[in-house]
Structures are given as C-alpha cells and as structure tokens.
Image 1 (cartoon, rainbow, N blue to C red):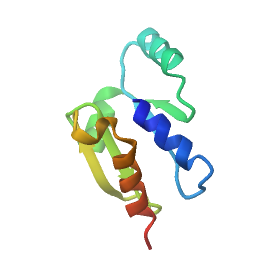
Image 2: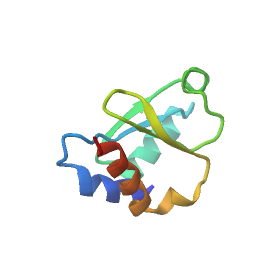
Image 3: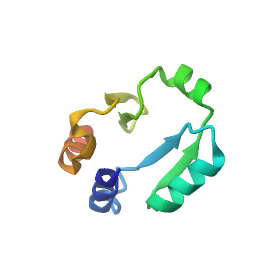
Length: 100
C-alpha cells in the first residue's frame, strides 16, 4: 500500500481530501503488527468483517472507495486492480472528485 502513502503525502494539506483505511481483519494481533510495520500516516479504523461487507456491499479485498464531499461513493476499485500500485491513478480519482 505504498501508493496510498505517496498519494497521502501529495494531499495531506488539502482540506478537501481525507484518507481513511478500514481494516476488517479478525486477528487483532496481526492487524497491530501490520499497522506497526506499515506506519500509515492517516486514520485507520477497524470494523467487523461481516457487518462491513454487508453495509458496504463488497466481497473482494482489497476494496477502495472514493467518496465525494456529500458522502456518495463515486468510484471504487475492487480486488487487486491495476491502479493498486499507482499513486498517479489514485490522484486521478481524487482530482475527479474535486471537480465542481
């Protein structure tokens, strides 16, 4: 997930952009090890896997959702899609959401 760190570095001072990682890992120890290793500079939340999948309607992991300022999901990437390692692709989605 280095692409998220790179994109975050680009947008960290932009008040119109927020990064939130939601983990649905059932193993707390594994989650904490992962977070300690990755050292994400943004908010990381934990959710129950079944509830999160039911409420957000996804089966593939990872799942990336790009949400506009009204709270509406405008773009999503499910599974290991090609943009997964591309900060430029993440930036493209963000710039699209920032358009009036």
